[in-house]
Image (cartoon, rainbow, N blue to C red; front, side, top):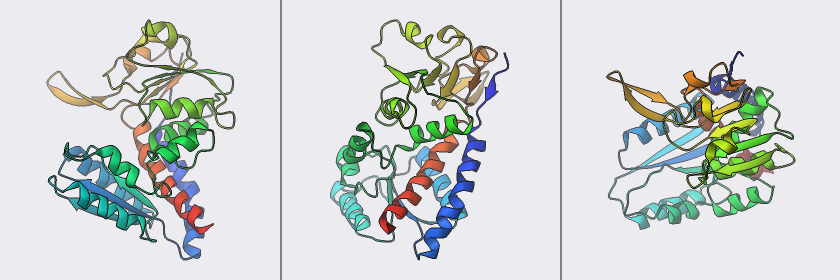
Length: 289
């Protein structure tokens, strides 16, 4: 069996192409979608991630402001900044890059972001709207996965989707999105570290979404012939004296057995930034309307 590669780069290009008209319409009304990215400390991975995000915004002619705070910043100062950004009409999306230093309550900070500017989709109000089937802002990675599936004509209707991982950032929201009648209409099984006989469930999957953060954990023994694999993992490993990035799926093992899979890198990753842009544009549209 030929295993089709579901390229996140190709899917993100399609998304950005569709955003051009929406951005132009907003600008014709005097509105330029704007993102405020807040970076606390000097985490190298966070630096790269935020830089890539701001570059993409700028390349599309959108507003992007970066607020750098020291690792020793007081929680009250960070909360005051968020309050100011909530009240800034030129800012439509607020992103606080995680992780935050240990002396700061991450949940308190994320909950302080206005739910109408919560383009990461982490606020309890937005999580609640998603849970009742009326999503406003959906976390970027799950939203990107749904776009990839749609872009490559992977129909979820009536299929069995198995998700490995139950985080509020990926696993839980993608399980809800897949099951919604208007979006996926799939039957969903959510597995996790406490699941007994994981292979029993994973081998039933028409679509298997691996979001457990374990390098190359899923191999051919976990899947059935013809399964579609969505690999959310980003893991750095040392092999043969070299450092490289791998996913949660052992791609060499499953090639020729899976009908399709997202590569790592250049799979789900590019869609996360793409959906951050889309959510910010959506926020501007909701404000305008």
